[in-house]
Image: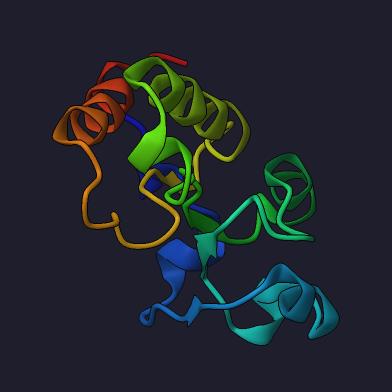
Length: 130
């Protein structure tokens, strides 16, 4: 399964692990995340403005690790297992391309989320072969 093992070199050397929370609008205004001491961007909530997965990977993919990205307000709690699998695969193909991605829901898994959807998320990650 994908992991942070192919993390950007800066993150592997750093004895600390800084996290950034909040919108990417704030992240982009403050400068490139790595230059601000950020090793990991969490959450990746792609439904918010400025959080396009492909753009984040293009702009910051060699500099930081991405954590999250699997939509937890509609797809995970109310989608079908096929919807969840498609969402996970999209995240793996964009954010995970070349490494540096930890797949998970973009925030906490919401109460009432069907167990079969959570399992579909986990199983899709484990079955992923780029």
